[in-house]
Image 1: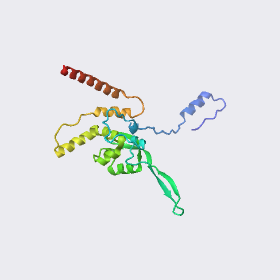
Image 2: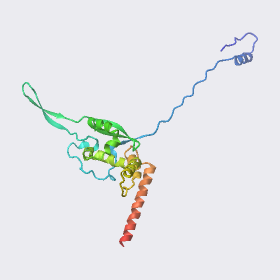
Image 3: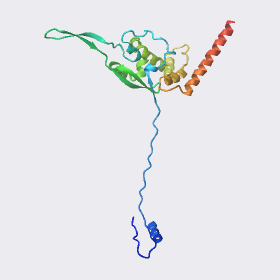
Image 4: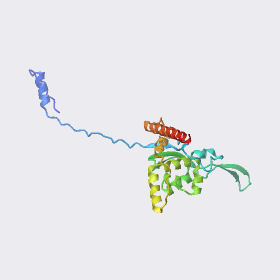
Amino acid sequence: MSFTTLRPRTSLLTSLQNLALTPTTTTTSRAFSTSSPLATKTISLQKIPTSAVPPYPHGPRLLYKQSNHGLYGTSRIRHGHNVSPKHHQVTPRTWRPNVHRKRLWSESLGAWVRTRLTTRVLRTIRKEGGIDAYVTKTKAARVKELGPGGWKLRWLVMQTSTFRERYVAEREKLGVEGEMREDQTDLVTVMVDAATPGPLSAVSRGILEKRATQMIMEEFALGEEAE
């Protein structure tokens, strides 16, 4: 860009006109844009409601009660003693489980599950292929090590449409006949919403109102049949 020097007997208007006609080089700026991240929920295992979940077959754990709210497997606090090899001095010792707080992805729920779990359980989850496969395994030993917290997550995963479709396909493949369990996929939305921070969404409130109306209608129908 060049500036014109004012000369005697030259008006200011002429100088401004010459400045406007002088060619200038401009650089085009690159437009900045961002893509919105996909919205995913993070539910807390401890906050999953227990009202709709069947009772845990083995009952709550009376020893090491914090394991009722996480995935601790069969780990407990161990008490013992250290004995020095030289003087055979006995020292009391306590061994606590190696507990971590992790966030694991659930394909069936389409959300992250935040919970406390031991390193042994975390290793088993990775071997099984995910938290869904870990909690839905049908062996008696697995059900026992789930605890009340894992039992809630197991029931919630088994109500999802993804799990039900896979379950129906396995029944047809094995030739199993009989009625399917009650479809409660609508409760998954409510329970996942309740396990996340903040109030219930309008969709969840609508589902609860619809279920309450259905229960009232069923009670009226049962009363009329009794009469």
